[in-house]
Length: 302
Image (cartoon, rainbow, N blue to C red; front, side):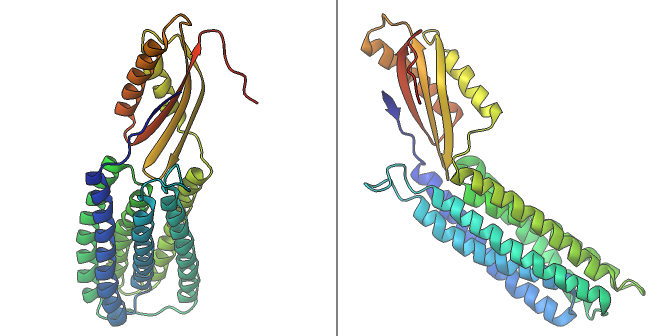
């Protein structure tokens, strides 16, 4: 049995933590400026964006806590680490988001029945332009961190703030439209559209988190890539029983290699080590577990 562990580096861990701090800071700023703009204008689309930012703030705080817990090293009671805490945090975020979207749909329906004109729309416009710039900067930073660390919590946050970009732009359109006579329904219409989009993002985050919690296999494309890497070694004759799963930023791959039965234990050990290095180059932050079998003598598993 051969085991090789490749945990998240200290530098990557710091990047994930800093990204979570940045998310909380941006959420707090957006909550403040959007509350001011909504109080001044009374726009439902701004209220929708404010509620979304409030929930983003709560979700970001939850994320920050989950990330701190998830990256604790394995201990005697948690041999595979604490990575799934990230997925639990992301799943909780999706529940918050679903609740906010449901409330916005209710408010939009009420505003359709009782239309209201907006006041001082220009204040809301300036606030939303500022929100777009700040959110875009955060999303670009989060994408950089996710690409480097593969953190599901940061990815979930990034999806939220990506949706915020579209939401903020939609609010700008609603506020611009409200300056024209007969366009009072544009604001609740866009508010309802934002609510629908939020529901969609909540579903995406929930599905991805649930997949991690139930140990769903890697995608077929990734599994095929692992197989190609394994079989590219000249002394690996075949393979069987490939199993994969994820836990936060950590990934786990288990596979049985079939080799010439006349190889010495040391030679088989060296082959396994070379295969592990190949796989880990393609899949960073991965623990690879290999079992060596003589070719043609496959273990039977229940």
